Amino acid sequence: LKHELPQALANSLAAYVGCIAGAIRIEDYRNGLLAAGFEHVEIVDSGKDLNAYAKVENQAACCSPVMEAATPIPEAPPASSSADPLQVIEAPCCTPAPSTPASLHDELASLLSQYDINAAAASVKVYAVKPSTGVR
Image 1: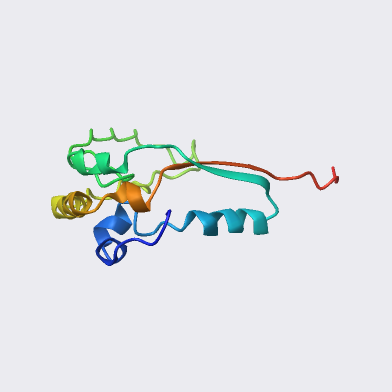
Image 2: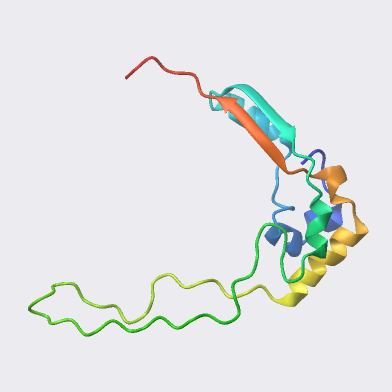
């Protein structure tokens, strides 16, 4: 963030999910990198128009929803217990998160139409060097 967000944005769940309300100030980020031992820290505003996120249908800033219809995964053939010691798990371990309700996207689009997010936030490029400790 270039400076603090307006309260409506800072307190909005839609702005948080949209990677805006949870952002930290650029100077705090720079100080954190310096405290971690980085040198020659440069944080450059990329000049991207963050208001463009309000124009993207069914997306909330950096986080796009999962596809509505997924192709079913074919079932694996049954394994012989003597030939293969691994067991087939019936339920997938990693399923996509459910898509974000349209109302969340609508709320973010509404907030971004009320505020010029480019005035308070930025998409940045970070350059820094971690010095060698001399130990190999």
